[in-house]
Amino acid sequence: MITLALAGIVIGIISSGSGLGGGFLVVPLLIFLGREAKLAVGTAFVFILMTAISSILTHYRLGNIDLRTGLILALGGVIGAQIGPHLMQHVSDHNFKRLFSVLLVITAVWLFANSFTSSEG
Image (tube, rainbow, N blue to C red; front, top):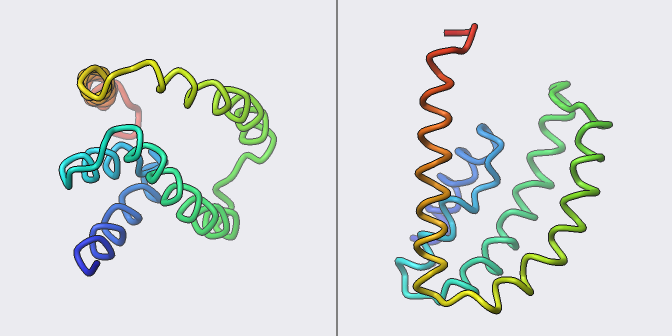
């Protein structure tokens, strides 16, 4: 329990500062701890929901929110969120781990490559 709480604190700091939601760290952590991929994904959303609410409040107070854009994205996200779990029912644990790891690597490479073209340096 203490280890999970400490992991939650660290992941909360990273996710609220990066905008990545935390699932990219929570899901692998839970899989590492022996949870099935579908359970890890569903459980990660509890974490994401709670940290997102807290993060939204803080980012709003700091003036870091484009509410219109966020709500438009959220509308699409709500629709997609109804489809994703049903698709997951047809993906084996083994294939999920492969797909998820490929997605993480592609995201990492893209972010790294774009860090060289950023005007903020």
